[in-house]
Length: 177
Length: 285
Image 1 (tube, rainbow over the protein chains, first blue to last red):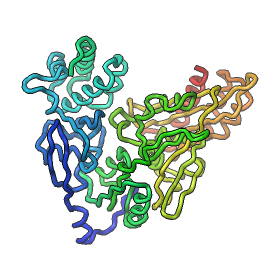
Image 2: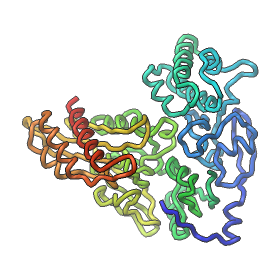
Image 3: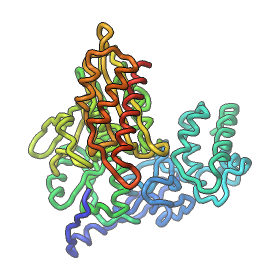
Image 4: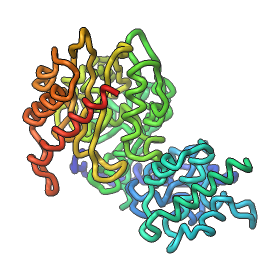
């Protein structure tokens, strides 16, 4: 890691800011966008695809607000470039509800008061939904470990933990989706 | 912050990747693997590489396989691959234990074993594992391929012996005999945060005596390494609490601790004494 930079000439700068055409597959829909390689997936989801449900907090992978599901894995969308996501299936918070019918995890967040300001909520929802889709039999301990990934400054986490545990129990009883 | 502009290259083969790297390394080009360390550093603009060679499309680098008495871990194998043991026996168990300490699940889904080793953060768990077990680092460039032993590979804080045009294509870890005892312990202030100190203990017992001990410390010095002085204390002794305490004390004395605003040298020595003793105590379980 160095702070050294090489002086950019106009032509190298032009090459570096040249836009690349990519197609992103988000929530079952294709988005054709032209982006600079330096644009993170989080930025492109919001700015180019207009899906502003994915929030950007710290922009360096600590807070988890930008968590999306990429090919069945929850990832920080601020820690990858959009050009790296072409050809992959992306799910954002907008893809959770089925029309007016909220996802069980969203219902549980409401029922258990698992949000106040709501800034971290999309990230927590995608993190928790992915964790339970991957392993519906998560123990209470494992749920805590998963949730330790993201930051919430309002709730003190207890109600988020309750919401996820309750959804886990419901999903075990009535397998849906 | 937003990362500075760069040129993006996406090779499909190892040959293409090393050719590109040879071309762009002198122009401040870097390899992009999992990106879970590099992208944050770029977001802070501590690093502004002019070129990124993204190796995620190189199928051959996803190889994770046993070859003879070695586990070969390709450059694109993610941390999450180790959540379940990847091989039977102590090595698979060790890796599945250690991986739980690396950041958080979304980071483990993208970050790679080899990327962590090449980045060489002092607090990297995989660097401690590589140092303890005597990993072999396979470095490839257009000039050829060479194997660098772990004890020569790590050279300081985020510094390795890789040349700027070399790609770490694979790390090889030795499979461990079934009767190997293992213990790992790390201390950090928050779950998933960078460790302030960690210890890994690996040994066998013959006739009630410890043989071939390998004791490594990570997170406390500029880079992870085996602590020969502590290993000498342990070798030939019975695997009992007083042996463990003696070796842990020796490890604490032997290190050259990093200091920062929150962490004095004395505190780090104290941590090393504790994490080494706990790693050794775990090795009996």
